[in-house]
Image (cartoon, rainbow, N blue to C red; front, side, top):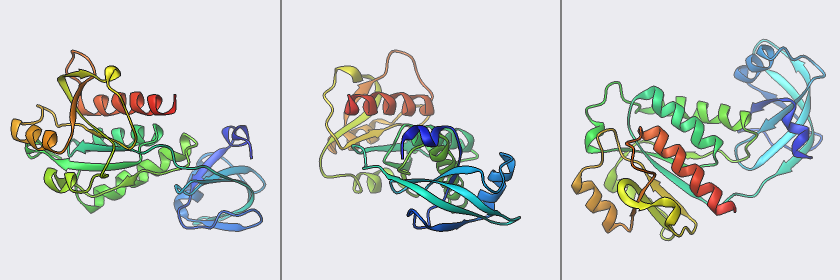
Length: 244
């Protein structure tokens, strides 16, 4: 299956079906709603992503009010790219959702929200199981829209010390800081972990923890960036350099 075969058709997400040529899969009410919004009908071609490296192309064979069935014709499997893990702040809900969407489009491997000291003053914050479900739904939508193959592993929010204990044992660790070395001057080797602090900055005690854990301070320029802007810019740079 060529990538161009997928680029011109609507897409849906399904994380439970086996995507194999010749299979007919049943998708849920959300997928059926998306298909109707796109004004598709029986016989129209769609692509399906499962978020675990497999994308498929098929045709709608039945469209109901609460489900849709797709006959799978072609399947493509994509290997994982070099890992880039994102540590993001628990922050404003809408801005976190936007950040999760864009990090998915750019191929983040995982998403771990951290409750920084300055996260506690934000209201309303993006945290809890219900918000986590919204993050995963936004990521799934972004994956389909961007024709990606791998969904980021979205984890529940955690304090900084717990997050640091859950990192890969090796690789490059960056914390974004205006006083750091320009990121383009740094050597990068996968896996990469990028830590993005909250509005108002990372406190000194938190920076000490990060540095003790092997994080290097890197800069995206002289301006103070919103956390979501910084996360997306840093991820785009790192992902590009790892694939160059």
